[in-house]
Length: 315
Ligand code: SER
Image 1: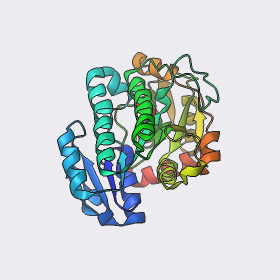
Image 2: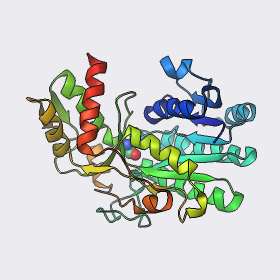
Image 3: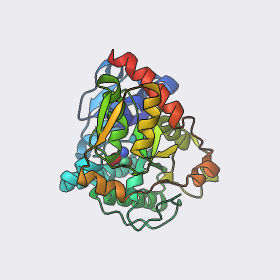
Image 4: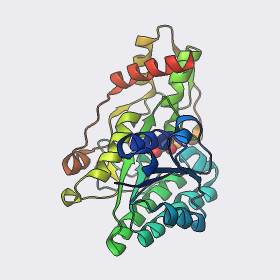
């Protein structure tokens, strides 16, 4: 990777990934794009262009001018918003990906696309979900994620585009909040624990989901794009995970560091239904074998680091 363009650069992953890419590859070599203008270090440290991925002309114009060799395509709606606006989710998640792949084909770019635990559904084996298994998701988000995985495979097979990707679990971070995902409780809980010492959780007790701390999510995104593809048996949509927990596990881990913290439950039926259709835990051995994936943060380490950083930020 020498010149990189990031879509969705103002989002939860994009805002941190862009800065890390600039640190590694040079500030002027990494172009941030989004429909929302970033602020602070992200805006000051390197080039930014307003780009709407649903507009193929603007995607082509910006790629033609900047000539990246790699595109990190992060612009997408998350699961709960996608469920509220399914037509818009199709337009952004699928239309956006199609425009990026077409432009990558034309200008010979490699493409990173995040898939998700959302690409699985109720008929998927829920425990240690294998890399290759049944994928019949029941949410619009999941439909766009499976379709995206297939489209990326197709562009590689048919046109030789160097597409690569990961099935991310819920991502926990303290810089930029996620927007409208089912796993967002695992971020919100930290803000509320520090600010109010009490949290109302929208998923019920016993809802196990895979999660990952942002430094691992960024490491995975960079490592898979830097990996030697001759070792790949898979290419797009590698299962990656760092931990699996239910709300009460996270609550207990936080309470050890914030005594007196309380949590109650007020279940959101839409997000509960989405969470129930996703795996409890994924098997990420293909990523470990094919490009050396290994996370650094478990539940305990992540919790300590989140509380340290967020306490400093919020006080
Ligand atoms: N974090 C995402 C969501 O909840 C899952 O990929 O929508």
